[in-house]
Length: 186
Image (cartoon, rainbow, N blue to C red; front, side, top):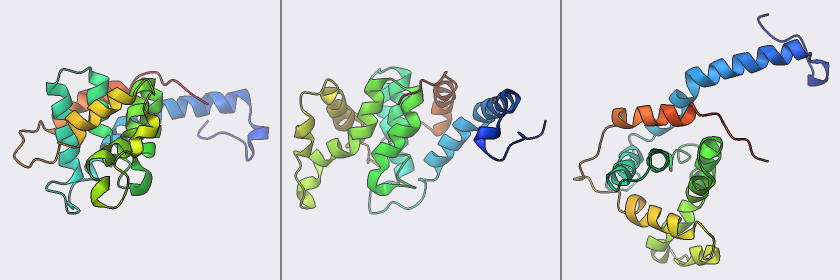
């Protein structure tokens, strides 16, 4: 079978779905980590006014997290926290969280989903927004973890002189993360 034999899902057979599931699994195993790393590499180039580009910012965030001794999953999240920027700059946090969601803990997904709002603490007052907007989430069980993520690895990761590890160092971690059995959510 080279392709399933239906034009509507209501016509699909068990064999069709077995074929589709095999093909999807093979594609995921072969390409998913590369596709995610491609989103990261797409951030190379324009600095958009920052001291470094977003690619270097991501590597620097991950390097800082690694050097703080956090677990591998959190390092991967620090590396990939902004991958939504190239395709959805206005809701990049939610896009990155959606991509990571099946492969990371609930805590790390929540942190990535909300890091944009928490980052606002460091600059919203300079653009006419409320820097304390994150306070509406105070009391959430992951509030302090997100606060730490932004304070220690994100807002400070724009230093052109920082000794940042190369992507090759982090690639095996990304591959292990995306090779996990995904957890599906509603």
